[in-house]
Image (cartoon, rainbow, N blue to C red; front, top):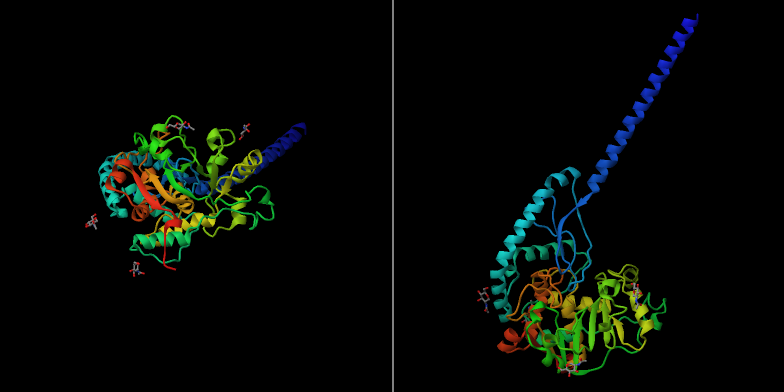
Length: 440
Ligand SMILES: *[C@@H]1O[C@H](CO)[C@@H](O)[C@H](O)[C@H]1NC(C)=O
Ligand SMILES: *[C@@H]1O[C@H](CO)[C@@H](O)[C@H](O)[C@H]1NC(C)=O
Ligand SMILES: *[C@@H]1O[C@H](CO)[C@@H](O)[C@H](O)[C@H]1NC(C)=O
Ligand SMILES: *[C@@H]1O[C@H](CO)[C@@H](O)[C@H](O)[C@H]1NC(C)=O
């Protein structure tokens, strides 16, 4: 009897154990399936971009699907060295990702090397063409051509251009079109959300409207080094500089006078540029800008600027209420883009024009005559992006994110320069809007 009880208990126990083992196994299988499901789904979403970030902030990624064709997927140089990186990465499975990663890396290295060698010949041709005003996009190296195509494809600012295109306007027609269409406009508190938020407290009460006789626009290009243009630059009534470009230590080539500084929003938002403490942002007029969507929906832009410039702006206005400090209106920024596209047959990069072109236009609004230094590169042209930094990339001269190449051709067509000024000094002269007479 005892034995039987033990036996029954034993069988029962085994039965129970078997049952719980089954339950356990069941849960294990469910868990594994669930895990696999989540994992595959997740991996499919796992985006991959083998990418390089260029000095000018341009961020080029190689399409993981077909590494034969280089694809820019991500982002983005924007105006000079200070870039936003907005990655628009590509999907791939985890498996492929692991398997192909090394191949991409090798391909990447090979292409960079190849491009470097090609670049030297290319650049010489391009410069000759640019000085003559006779260049086409297919003279750009493969990488830049591809980058342009990719930006057009990605269209991150949702640009929709419906205007006409005509690449054969005369110099006078170009100048008049520019005068008509690119009038300087700052943000003011007449529009929402700035009206509602009482930005009247922060925006200067007077618009920027002083008229200067002679002005210099000093590009930050590396090729301004050894130009010895400092003294000539300082002889202008007003001198415009960009972003965080210093003059201390570079006076011989870039001069020591600054009247206006144009800054992209990264200068204000990134503590690296010491916007709240550096003396280069003091005792001069300041203009800041940030890329808004093409339809310049100010409400949307205020909530999601590319880099938050509003906080620093307010802080600076509070600390230095007497200093003239404006934010350029997004409609002004995009009017420059429209101007460039309307004079170019092919699709230009649908991204704001460079700070350089913005600065030139601002000065054409404010000055009777504008001398632009080293924006059209001189014989000193090199791939050094900025005179005060050490990165090198051709894209800084010919553009990746910005439609720089097209801007420069237009400036060349609108400007005047002797061969010596253009090639040796890197100087082009443009008339201010007040000196352009147009048919009414
Ligand atoms: C422009 O350059 C092309 C070659 O790139 C040449 O065939 C053409 O004659 C040039 N046009 C002018 C007006 O110089
Ligand atoms: C382009 O502009 C030129 C110069 O003004 C003009 O002669 C020509 O008719 C224009 N072409 C088109 C298609 O509008
Ligand atoms: C700028 O340089 C000139 C000489 O080129 C000098 O006379 C002047 O004091 C300098 N100004 C400043 C603000 O450093
Ligand atoms: C400038 O801003 C940084 C934070 O961005 C802060 O740590 C620093 O104290 C500020 N400096 C001045 C002089 O206000």
